[in-house]
Image (tube, rainbow, N blue to C red; front, top):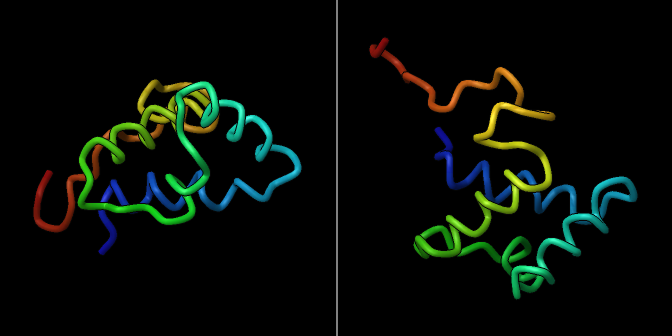
Length: 83
C-alpha cells in the first residue's frame, strides 16, 4: 500500500512533463525557491520536502483544499478494518 506522501510525490511529478500542467508546476516551484528535483527525486524521509510537495499540489490542483481536481476527495483513507 502506498502512503499519502508517496501519492503527493508521484502525482505532480507525473504532470511535470505535461503540456497542460507542466509550466504551472515549474512556475510554482520557482516561486517557492524549489527545483524540479523536489519532484523528480523525492526523498520521502524529508518531512519538509513532503510538506512542500503537499503545498505545491494544493496550489496547483487543490489537494487538501476540497477544490479543483480534488473536490470531494477524502482527506484520509480509513484503511482496512477501520471506519
